[in-house]
Image 1 (cartoon, one colour):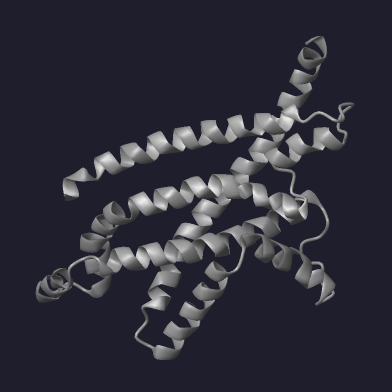
Image 2 (tube, helix red, strand yellow; image 1 turned 30 degrees about the horizontal axis):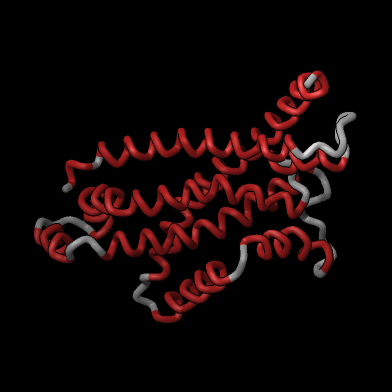
Length: 228
């Protein structure tokens, strides 16, 4: 017990640093993937057959392959194949590569949710807007957007909660997120080795984070109930 109490401040400090990296990756991914996903959804609905096909094939590839493989390709491919280590070998480079992989991956998932949300809006609203002299851009942002947000919020919320947990995959390229920090004490870190309990502690961080997000996203859904 005395050993546990002695190790606890060291472990918590390390896990806090790792979780800050996790949160950083989460927010960068979220703010990058949402607008990119909307752009990709427009591309997948393009009236130009070739362009539409390109976007659909891209979505199919990204959604059909594991995120872990995408992380490895994005981080290692430039250096090993192109002989151009664009990411470098430091923590900042690993974070940048992780952010790019996560943004692309989640943007494709979000794009399909956005596409379904857009197509669920009755076409009569477009026709009514055109009769009133509105452009298609005005119809989308002034009439359809909030209705779409209401319909897609539950599946988007599910993807956001999944994203929190998926950030742990970044340890595959040695990004020092919270699980990396917890696992390090098994191998030997800061004078502690062979300790598995810090790894179990990482689950508390995910539970608290997802609990807060669940409450926030639930309140957002309630505020949009007037669209029923």
